[in-house]
Image 1 (cartoon, helix red, strand yellow):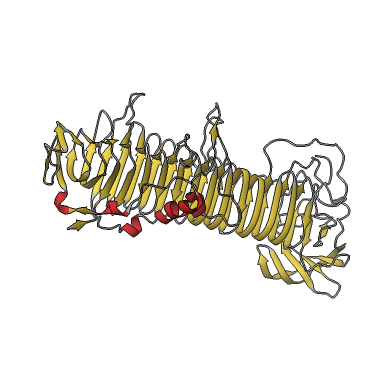
Image 2 (image 1 turned 120 degrees about the horizontal axis):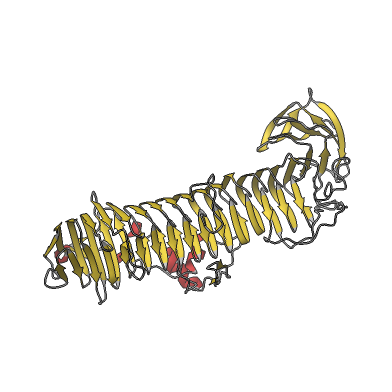
Length: 618
């Protein structure tokens, strides 16, 4: 007779297999090259799978080591199950071919399992330990059916050796593990649940783990949580899978003084990754919420992370309290991710890619930071609070919706180093025209709808910028030391809809020779938030209406509706209708509005917006 966990079927528990095995056979397994310098900082390498418009979570995972997941692990013969009873300070075993005197040995309140097989444990060990030390082949399967184990001198459950280990949580069972509050520095097994072998946690019951002395759950190989309710409280890291940590289902709740979920193999560039593919994950961490030496992949899970006390908490310079941190690639390709971080909400030393799913971020520093490249091609991304919203050397938005609220720059293409030098004179000529030289950074808008509310520069590239499609709305700064648009090099527009409003002191417009023309409006007054500005053509038709989110003095608008060389009237007041993006409308009523000025498409504004470049030295 076959018996299996009461909730997870092989299909549910091991949905990860097509990601990690099938695709890996097609693409190979050299994922990245990542290095660690003398300060312990991870440096990004190069992914074997190029991060481009076709990259999916499956492709990123396929370039990493396949997991140990095997559907056969979910089946066993009931006749072979060994029953182990925990009774306070004693242990007894019976049944099966590996009962006490065979593969189960008991020494006081310590039970040791020395062979592969299936073992069902129940009862309480008030101060004891469960040890797995199996040198042969095969899976050691532990069914925890109402187990409560505490240990005042070490880990509660230790797998010192096994081909593979599995913990099964039967339906309706509640299990707890708690360890000592102090480990020696040279102790290997330094978590309440510690495994030196590949470990899987499955079933529909619950497991509560308390790491009093260090980590909650640790595997020095791979770790898969496929189902069940797993709750971890730890003074240091919550759950660690050195080679990989995969959550494929169930509910995982972690409260950790250190990092929440972690994978830190720094010796093999196909390992050290996190994959959150299904289920629900909730993390509260004093350090980083989720941390991987190589890749972090989201592909269907519902994930909530708080790190470092959240975005209102100050972080010391020598501490890391990022919501999600990867050494090489972070990919969001499905599911829901909510982060409240004292530091960056999403951070990668390499690339961040948002392909699909729902992302909600609050950050004490950057909403999303990627050292090399930051790509958004789909999904729904909202940054509710940040210092800078999106920051990377190369930023591209090709789809989805992006909403950014930032106290400083909304989108910032920066290499992290100062480039060029201030000239001390006003930049001249159409477009871009910041005071610094083009540093090679890029912002590329090819689609999607992006809305920015920035206290500093709204759309800022230390290099160049291009826009060919999509909608970009910038509610820029109110002070004259920043601008809604700030591009050091060229800023060309060939398509899409652009509206950028803000102060006038540093206002910038696109290149005069852009394929798609623009208008640059400079107002003598400063209309208040909520004021409507309308652009009207010579036939009296409204081409654009904008309802401001804050006080403003300049507006730059570009769309296919404009005709180069044509003159348009600017009205302040009236009402807007036909919203095409937050604050931007296709029509309006200007009967009660005031005609303040006229502008010619393709020409920079006069007065406060000089020359199409910067409004003055920075």
